[in-house]
Image (cartoon, rainbow, N blue to C red; front, top):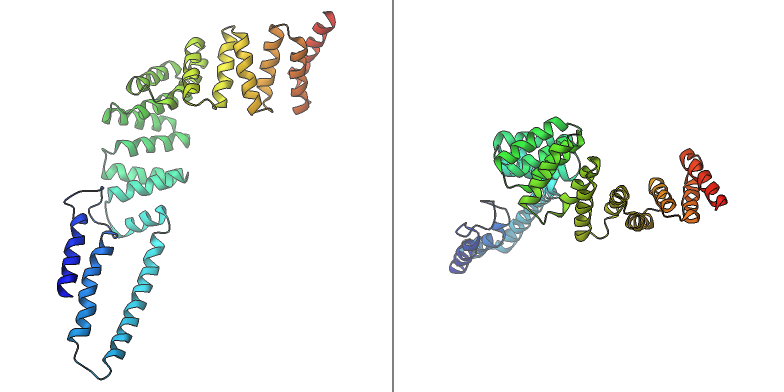
Length: 321
């Protein structure tokens, strides 16, 4: 049993001793599960072998086993509570360690995922003190700042991320979105283009890029951006809607009507798109269909004054035909 226990311990230690690194961690509880079984074999069999041959030896060993198991159960129950979820695990880790960059990063990201943004910002700031070079976490910090309305601070952080990691396409995209939110659309376009230059397959960038181009009335480019979005995400209903608007501005009425209908199949209560469709149908001389669109709006909201005026005008056109 000494040989078996010791060889078990050494043999199962090899994969987890760090000769081959399998992650960021240097130590982990799970590394001990199989390994310590070898030591427990030695302890258990040694107790049987070396304790004097008392008359009530088996009773004493049985009681010791019960006490050991009870203590282990109590400790295990306490420890398991720390593993309830990522938040509780990293919260406990930070209570028992200092300046732990990995735990702070994971705790901040867990708070971020739970949309507890103010708490996440606090932890990300602590992480920046411990590890200022953590570019991806700084990007998450900037996103949290942006979503809590602290746009200026978010932009500052996104720019620092880009300085640290010049090929980080997500940071360029997020910076562009923040600038667009401030109305700095021309500047935003340049950062969108940089994100696409770094990663042409970065599908998420094209939709927000298209929205910004629409604001700048650069409709040809916007159509290209929305089409790129739809290549990757054919069911992106919002892209169909904004594509319809861009096409309408370019005078491509038939295509705009097609995209508007796709949008309305998914969102039949959208008043603005029904109105757009009605106006486009009127341009094509399809007065009856336009009237139907306007009446659909008034079923959704009978107090829609603008639509009521459009309907009355369309009815007059129909009567004059």
